[in-house]
Amino acid sequence: MVDPDRFLADLHELRGFGAADVGKGVVRPAYSEADIAARRWLAGRMENAGLQVEVDPMGNVFGLAEGTSLLMGSHSDSQPEGGWLDGALGVVAALEVARASQATGGPPVSVVSFQDEEGRFGVTTGSTVWSGLLSMEKADTLSDHAGVTLAEARAAMADMVTGQVDPTQFSGFMEMHIEQGPTLDATHEQIGVVTDIVGIRDMKITFEGQQNHAGTTPMHLRRDAFQAVSAFNALLEERLRNVVTPQTVWTIGHVSLHPNASSIVPGRAVFSMQWRDADVDRLTRMERIIRGTAQEVAAQRGMQLSYGPMLGLEPVHMDAGLQEALCRAARVHAPETWRKMPSGALHDATNVSRLMPVAMLFVPSIGGVSHTFEEDTDEDDLVVGLKVLADAVASLA
Ligand code: GLV
Ligand code: MN
Ligand code: MN
Image 1: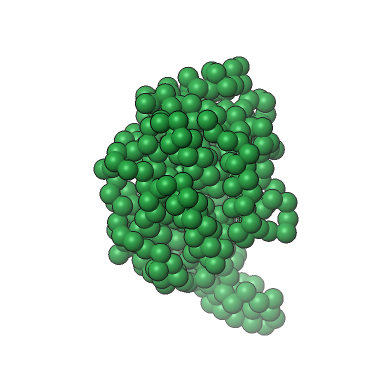
Image 2: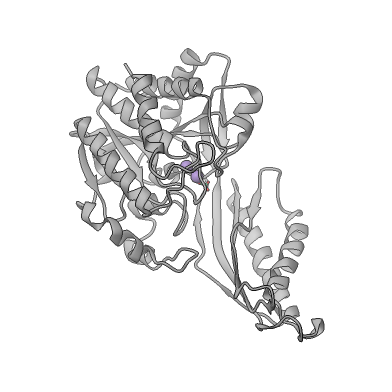
C-alpha cells in the first residue's frame, strides 16, 4: 500500500531545495546548485528504497530495481520561476509506488528524474538525449539565454555520473504530472488519463540592426532591433490566425535586447520563438509563416536575420494498454470525476515513447496555472492520483 503521508512529506522536503519566498514556488533550474542538491537528496531516497542509483552523463538520475522493471518518474528541475509540483510530483509519486510495490511483492518499479525537462538548454533535453534523439556531443553545444553551454553546466554534477543507463531493462514508462491547464479544475474532476501529447517547435531568432544614440538619431534613419521584433510580432498575430485552431499556441517568452539601455537605440534583439500543435503539418505551415514574416521585416527595416538551431518534438500517442490500466484504476478511485484528455504541455514521456510503451496521468492545477510560483494542487487530489497510479501498476503484475 502506498503511504500518502510519506509521499506528501517527501514532496514537501523536495520543495525545500530552491524554495522561493512566494507561495509554494521553487527556483531550481537544471544544473543550478539547488537542482544538484535536490538530485543528491533524491539519490539518497532511492538508495533507502533499495534501488541502485545510476546517473548518466546528462545528469538524469535513475534508481534501478533488479531485472526487468517498469520505469516511472518525471523531472526535478524547474522553470526559472516554477511551482513545487511540475515534475517533482511525478518523481516523488514514482518513488512512493516503487516502495509500495516492493513491500507488497508487486511489479518491480525503477524511478527516474530526467534532467533539464524545463529546457534551459533546449526542449526536454535530458530525456531527448537519453532516448537517442539528440547526441550528447550536439547537446553539449546548446547554450542557455546567458550564453552558458550545456557542456559547461553539466560539469557541475560530473562527480555524480556513473555511466549510461540501458533502456532495454524497462518494460514501459508511466509519468504522473499536474495538468498545468484549466480543464480538470474547471470541471471539478480529479484525474486525467492522457491520450496524446502535442508537438513543439522552438528556435532563437536574431535581428541585427544598428546600435545608435537615442537622442540624435532621427526616427526615419533608425535600424532599431526592438522595433523589428515588435513589427514581427504584430504581423505574426495576424498571419497565424489563418492556419491555427483554438488548441494551437505560440509564444515569444524571452527577449534579449543589446545593450538594453534607455538612451541607446537597440542594435540587436535575440528572442525565443516557440509554437505547439497536435498536427505536424500545421507546425510546418506555421514555420513557413514565421520565417517568411521574419524575412520580410528584416528586409523592410534593414536588419540582418539569423536563426538558432531548430528544436522540436513530434506529437505522440500514449500506449493503449497502459492507458487502460490507468482508466481502470481511475474508475475505482475517482468514479465520475475522471476523463481522458490530451496534453498541451510537453513531457519526458514524449521522448521515452521512442523506446517503450508510455502512459501519463494528470491531477488538476488550481486555477489552471503553472510555470509560476502560484502553481498548486489540492493535496487530496495528489493522493487520489497516487492511488490511481499505484493501482494501475499493481494491475500490471
Ligand atoms: C514543459 O515544461 C513544457 O514547456 O511544456
Ligand atoms: Mn513538467
Ligand atoms: Mn514545466
